[in-house]
Length: 65
Image (cartoon, rainbow, N blue to C red; front, side, top):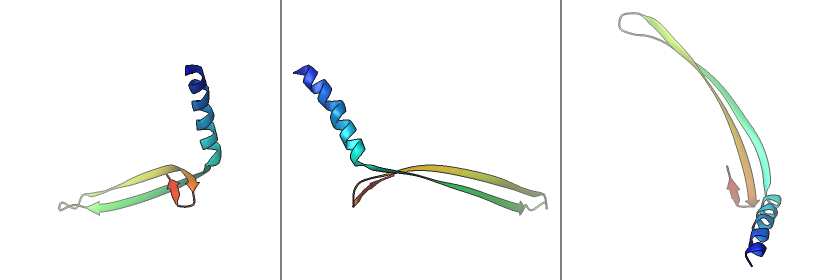
């Protein structure tokens, strides 16, 4: 009985993964800020963000990100 369960669990997981639709997406953002303080010292910074996403859809109303 234990061997049957051990064989059924991976088969069920693979069938669930095959039923889902996967989509990869990404977003890249760059922003900069320049500022002065009370002593008129110039300053600023630049920051980058790169985000990757994996979207999956199990049913029409069930989306996972």
